[in-house]
Length: 212
Ligand code: HEM
Image (cartoon, rainbow, N blue to C red; front, side):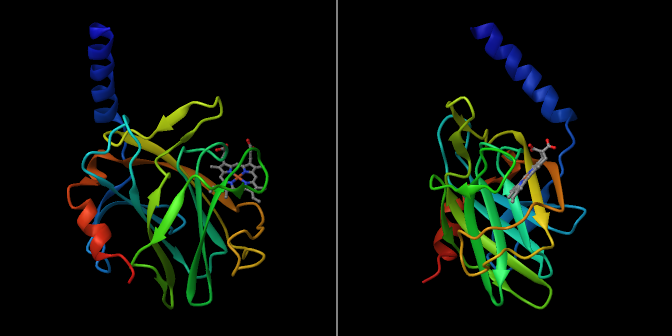
């Protein structure tokens, strides 16, 4: 047991040293939060901040932020790096208001509502001439039940594969979080530095950015 743990640790280190990480630190002026931030070639940005104590041992909350061009129909974040059996965060805007929806796909068709992820919208959420921006505290984005029914927790110390999807076509009912929408124009994956996303300021950031 001891040896296998040590070996796993060495392999883990070598892996993270060699892996190409796609995110980098970004300080968001609207919230004062330092995120690990990734922008896809399609110009959609996915940001994450974690509590300092986040590991793979127990579930934890995250702060996420998505920034997307106003022309976009919707943008999605797949927390397990694939379409099915993991939490999906969808965001779009309805005029001046930013909308979000918690979903989970059980196949390659319209994902249904997902109740196990709860979002609290924070400051740093709004629409301007060019972009809409969504910032939220999420309980249940970093852990879920996998396809085999086993609990899965994102390792907050490691580099992690996420996936995105988006469409230029608007959702059917922009004011309704349960709305239908059509298949993505594009999907992709990236590697996010979760260890670098951790901060002992996490709780303070939640407090200072809570909407009264
Ligand atoms: C009406 C809604 C949707 C439909 C009909 C749909 C359908 C599909 C189909 C047919 C594929 C290709 C599967 C294959 O060739 O192996 C696919 C792949 C994918 N979809 Fe969707 N999708 C939808 C929404 C979403 C959403 C909301 C997300 C993420 C937030 C997402 C993420 C992905 C990803 C990451 C892939 C790549 C393959 C994989 O990870 O399994 N999809 N989707």
